[in-house]
Length: 214
Image 1 (tube, helix red, strand yellow):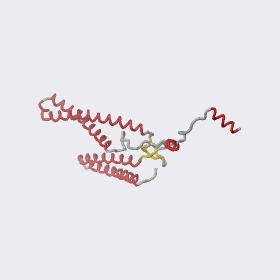
Image 2: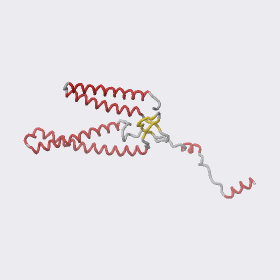
Image 3: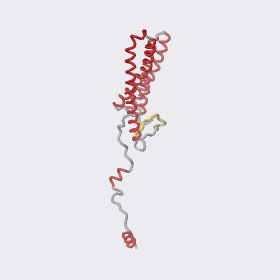
Image 4: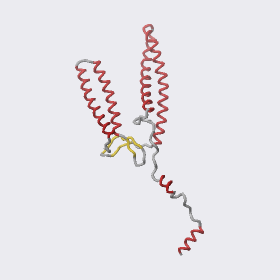
């Protein structure tokens, strides 16, 4: 593990508290099922799913980020004997990924919103009349089925878009907020003008230097 900081201690503590909570909730679900309290069991399962997601997010935050030997910011996926394990990426790659995923997500928001909203409106209109027509009832069922998928997909993309706008870094296509890494040697060359004032001696100057040496 890398150097411990107050931030990493906080997130790792949250990870293990969440995992302990998962065990407690699992026993609570089992107890509810034993007592045939189905609604309570379903509610606890929903809370368990939220806590499970929370511990995954907390773990990724606890793993943190590092700056590699090339000056690139990298997301750590795990630690091995104090060494960070990560998938090498560059700032330029992350900028391209950000633009691609942002555009794809906003297209999905548009089309899923149109489809989900249209099917939901149809289902709302058809609900009072489904007993009058078997065909209408069939279309109502299809609208509910496909409309549900579209609405759920829209909310998922909306949440990702909200996290993106807030600058959340632990997601694919996050805003690239870090500066471009400085390349070793470039600043030194610019400051010292190592080669800026240099020129190659012509033939006459070279011969003069040789004659002086003789």
